[in-house]
Image (cartoon, rainbow, N blue to C red; front, side, top):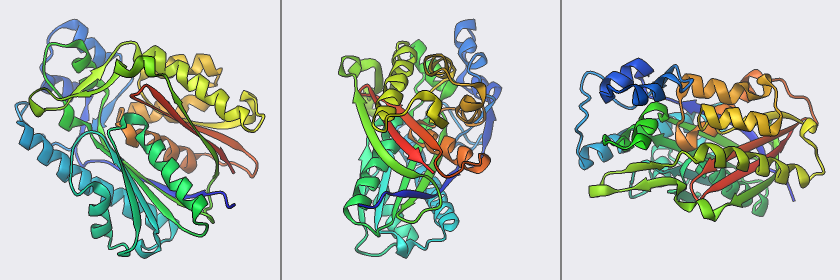
Length: 341
């Protein structure tokens, strides 16, 4: 059985970038506590699918979903085309498309729109992973990897896109202010084949802690998405990163020192701080996750692909090096992949 390999990764962001000061001014928070969420985020700026000249904070449900659809389709296509170009593939080379999002609704789903926009073959297979939160790019990657193992010689395209700004909700809850302070918009895409130049995906693991089912997700008062984000997520997420890392390493009899590269979901400053302690990682090993948080914020499912793209672009692995990818999401779940160059 062939082992799928990553051929290319690429990302896309909206044209407008906002500093934390810009977003704070639009959010209108005046109290020190909510303003403190922005100041302590370790985020310098974020890209949002919003025209600053036309933005109003009172968008209705229809306007929010229209903005989601416009941004999600534009960014997913841009990231997908860039990835195919880096891989040296044409859309006709793609046998399987896996897409994911959780910040809006679109039927036909994003995979169908991408097939049309990219002009993939009419018999291309596809799956859309919806409502799986920040971990869903890893779920989509697992589905693509499973497809390639079942059909050696096939090639797959994975696309994660989020317009988190379409789920901003102004109310008095502290968790809404935290969401406004960290979440952003973006898309990531990954090309997966049997002959990729990048690392092989040696294995996947999923870990659920269902006792924390209500810690994170969305609710829809009046049909408008609103983030559920318990303060316990910072603790739960870091602990589950540690548990997932151990589970992945145990499959190959590895120890923490055997892992050269770490692609961790840039969930937030406190999650990364705690994960660093639990995993005993160096500043250099944490830098890719921290840099993505600093430069882009948390783009939900797309974030882990930004971290992986940065790692592959800036590092110089040698054959035999090991890597770990870990995403976190509602459920509460950790999704991981073990990589080897």
